[in-house]
Length: 79
Image (tube, rainbow, N blue to C red; front, side, top):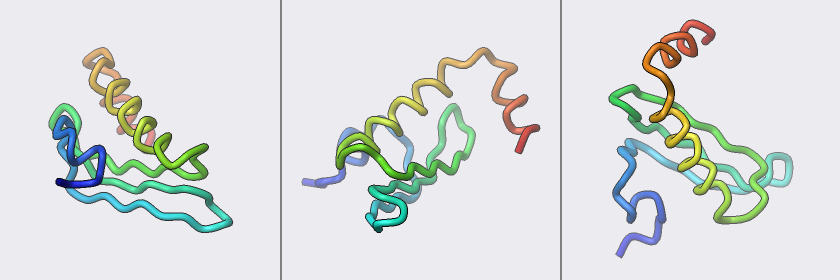
C-alpha cells in the first residue's frame, strides 16, 4: 500500500513528487504532473498542515481542469 495520498488515489497523473520541511519554508510539496494533457510543475510552500499541501494540489488540479478552453494558453504566455 502506497502511503502517498495523491499516488494512492490514482486520479492524478504524477510524474514526480517530493515532500519536505525546513524552518524557512515550512511544509512543502513539489510535483510534476499532467493535467488536461499539459505538463505542470507545482510548488507549494508553508502549508498549514501535513495534509493541506495535498489538498492544495487537488484544488489546483481541479481549478486547471475546469478552466475555459482559452485560459490555459493565456497562463502559459505569462510564464
